[in-house]
Length: 383
View 1 (cartoon, rainbow, N blue to C red):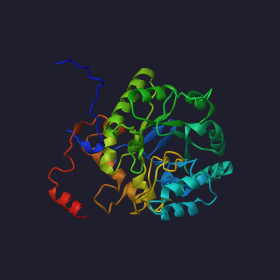
View 2: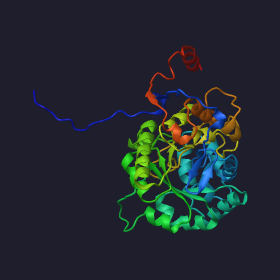
View 3: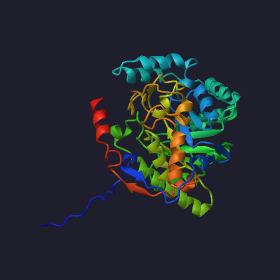
View 4: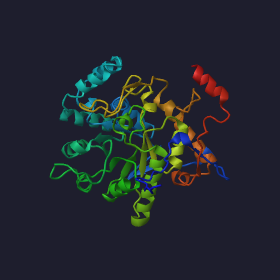
């Protein structure tokens, strides 16, 4: 027989549904845990961000999220800055039949961004006393970020499906993160990435936070359309390793934020054990009464004019934002009282703070949701 060489080596990667956390030998009262998040000079009492999606965050939602201690990111390239009255367009998207919704989105998102609305939206958030974070794609960052900074934003998020520190294009000078950071007097968060090397190189540009995750969002179809992505448990661990190595080398701690793939409190807790410093949520928050999507959720790439990579999903409305964050939970699926779930998990894992939660033992456990759950599985299938 002829000898053959292995063309590529592959490793097995894991999503949150395939792992479980091992409790510690020491437990802590949940109310004694510290779950605060620091991004540069800003501190948040809960390590939860709302994703920059039009069905999740508008001005009112951003204010409500800030008052609860978290952070909502407003999409400056979405409906809020294209229409003086975006509620009418949001209703149109919510009412569209499934076979027409993508074409309708492509049409409404083709309207130009109105620069005056950028300042109006930011001012409304700031006048309410809320922390204001906004999102821009790399293509529009150099043009629109000075306007946003002048209007008073507290955090800039530069976000695309895949973001790297070195981008090759026909442009003579593309977006250089180190230059943007020097120009703006505010923290800059950049994403998204899933690998050790990409995360480490982004941190070396001077960014203040890195978003982790490609394609795991409930409404995202990137993995189906272009085949790109790494399951979130592995992606989070790899980027956490880059953060820790960068910290040991430089003494500068850059938080990572796991973005997408979190369906419930269990996934959220696993993300922190895998090494994240915060999570960014979409579909769970789209289900709240305060979300502008009227029980619908879609991603930033859904209305792309040539290659949409997302779909509108109906998630329904089940409770208020406060109940989702702090309870009391009225359901047993883990989608409410996320903060309570995190504190309880940290307590049984013996973690007094988020960095100690990073040390929690994680095991491969594909049967974690099925072992002993015959009746639950049968009843779910019957529905």
